[in-house]
Length: 575
Image (cartoon, rainbow, N blue to C red; front, side, top):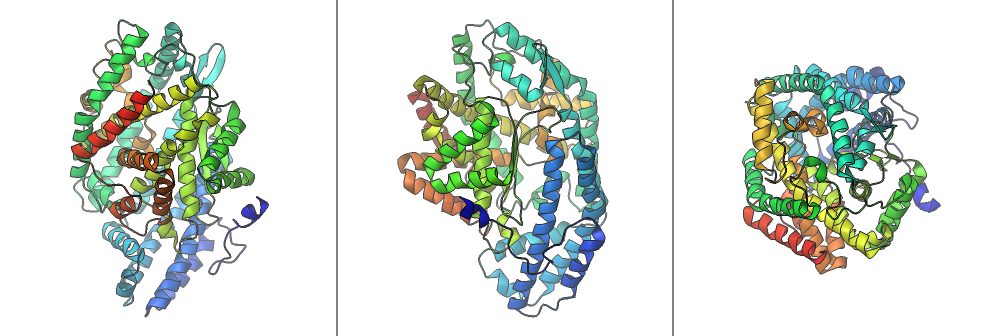
């Protein structure tokens, strides 16, 4: 094990000095100046120039990464906040225009056409060309403003706590009580959580309105009709269009929502309640106590390492390396930002996993999910350029969501009792059925938001309800919870921090079901295809990467129907 860890040191630098650390912009500027002065006349020179640029960008990315990680791990530490904001406000704005100059220099080189013919470089160069097309100097300060604004969501959410049974709880900790078998207790907890969120509804509404207005300005500055169209270009969505998203929405409505109704109707009958309420959705329908797959963060990590070992010891070793290097912060606590992520650290090549575990099945699945992202980071580690390691989210989320499913045969690590194991698998598969409509809800909401940037808060709430109702089951009773329902969208971090990054979860979820289907038919072949696709990084298009995993990149009703039928068959086996 020590040999594995020793092997994962930062590669020896060829462009930056070994002791270089970022504190101020003045330290970075000479390296950009040096890149801008190079005369690039032939392909070997261009390739070497790109390697130098990649090294510089990896260093910058990792430095920003650690600032973000430290800030989210403790939102109350003023020094962490200041370090992150110092980068965002005084360093990053200087980088953006020079990156644009570097892109112009590369594209102007007579050697660029030769490099385009090499695998991976063609994908990178098309992204570089698109970045040049949409870059505007006037958007640099606006991007800084957007980063400052989006940070406020974490601050507001991270400060939210409620008292449950005399104990102060984070929202994640309080949410565990929604699995309590006492309906009265669940109702009280749901009310406490909802009322606490509603206390900040005006602040979150105002924050979102300011984000929408500023984002719309960014899109118009770059000559797009709206921010949505700008983001499709900025996110490098070369392989699908907004219409494909609309097709996804419609397919989910046709093929998944009916099953959602079926599951909700069955839950209502099992619970024997006069009306199914939102606080009845997390409890076991047979009123069994909540599943507890682990006790504390250490137990969760150790069990997950064992689970990965069973798939392939290489996978378990990746988590051991992260554990030994302190690249994990798993447990929920006051002052910690909400959510979970795997942050790729570009220079060292060993990512960081952040999450808010309490004791739930969802927490267990979250670590499996982020562990899938981590494995992806590791297997891309030796790719030639940093750009090759920055996969689009449709592929990144395929890595994570597939890991949730292909580990299921080894979940007995977490559950000694067969009944608990079956229940865990059943709950997770039902969660997938619920996830696809929720993804469609959030994505369609975003399309409307940015197609209609001048809307009022009242119009926003009204449209939210129209979209929410279209993708929700018709069994759950919201009649006396209208205000809560109006603001459900405010809990979705992506709307505030990473706009339009959500449809990928739906696309990748479909891909993950297909990967799992292949794995069930032939575990060795299925795992090999999955890992082979991940190792390619972003050196091929999204459809080609899905094909490498032996699956399709498809949003048609027929394809979704086939995959959902497979999930339904697996669900039926667990009853």
